[in-house]
Image (cartoon, rainbow, N blue to C red):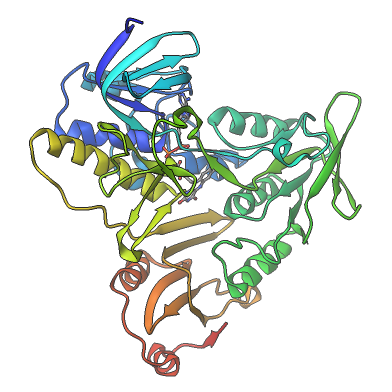
Length: 435
Ligand code: FDA
């Protein structure tokens, strides 16, 4: 079939990675009409992390255009005009439903055909729906997931409209924690439900989780652990009325928020490109197994040089940096040049209530909790170090100053040697305990 549109570069996906890739194309030099972003969403690329945080607050919530990329990294905000100005095509509200990497063509839901010379896949990830776990009554109204800005709008609408105001949050990861806090600030009655023995199980130690759970309890959030949602009951309007937990307990609920797991959006490319660990496999320049096809952000599985392993990372810092790396690599290869391999230091952050933490590096090995993790002490500041094979390899800091955050990032990158934990404890000169 003939192409309706043809571009030198196409970015498929329109959020974090796409926006940062566009900026890097602009920095490196791109001619008018050479680059297009194709996105299912109706708005220009934005910082997704806002959706579970400032977007949900009752007072002065964040709204577009406030959080278009690249405000998250302190750079120029790219409004729709920014793209027009640079001659970058923003093709919005356009879902691609078919991809043929061999003939370099993308087909949209309205049957338009887009051709490209170089493709950057930035389709990201999407929350797994409870439907996939065979839970009863999942079609009830007022069961929410957070994928796009539309989802956040629907949640906000429900929060504003509901009179009974009972919310159940399913999933104890950092997104569940953020949304719980936002709904509590909206004065809802909030109960969190999760299977694991403590919140943030993928990253948090018992010491970090103990702090969080006590802090949340003080804010009036109830926590039920060790169980999952087995089903929902629905009222005559089709709205959710109750959540039945495995084990039989029933919770009243007018709003349910679910964040249990995310899945990378790779299905369009199945069988056309190599995959690994659930993502699209790339090299250190985010080139996939198919020439001139790159994959960045949540969807890519790339070599994490620091730990000498292949990894997929679902965090915004990597979405930004991988996008920049891919564009630099594309531009360099056109000039017959090479660039340095991606050398990423994993970095995650989260904010809720007046808590803000950062984590750098790897959470393997022994753990040392430094300072005071009792929220009742009023300090709300502590760190945790992970120590493996005689080196500090990971660091978490609650409510650090920018300078302190830089310092822990450096630890995780440089991996200072620790012959003996007792010596380290003494050197720190602060209260600390092994976990
Ligand atoms: P992302 O998923 O953001 O974007 C994918 C884009 O592709 C979307 O625009 C989508 O519509 C489009 N798309 C997909 N398929 C398509 C198709 N077939 N046709 C057209 N378009 C298509 N991280 C962190 O470090 N700290 C934090 O505090 C948070 N907070 C946070 C909150 C919430 C609610 C979420 C969901 C996620 C976070 N994250 C986070 C994770 C972070 O937001 C995430 O890593 C990045 O958004 C990934 O960016 P990408 O651009 O790779 O994918």
